[in-house]
Length: 164
Image (cartoon, rainbow, N blue to C red; front, side, top):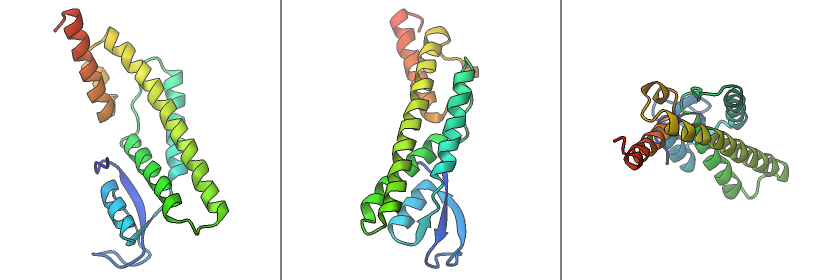
């Protein structure tokens, strides 16, 4: 699930390695998960920032016919914050109702916007597969997950149409 392609801001709760209590550091998503679950760090909630990046990407996709390049690691950061918000609510039942409601609202908003972005881009990838399979120029604008999808669908299209 976590690939190390996304950097997550965390606040150190307990001295660890070269970090002191109170330090804010950027670490890979899988490390952030492990250290958060162990109680060594607290996740700096940047969900609003990720939602803003997704909103900007959605606007860019709606304004442009071809696929646009996404910020590096956007999907990975979004997936991390989905994990974080779901688990924060589950693991902190004693938290104030207001805090839980804020986290749940962010979770619902992030899920919806991420799905919207994926649907817009998926439809564009489908069109690209039909019109321009295996385009190297297009590959440079795709995330690693989208690149895999595009190449697999291009291969299936070419086999089906006899262009392989």
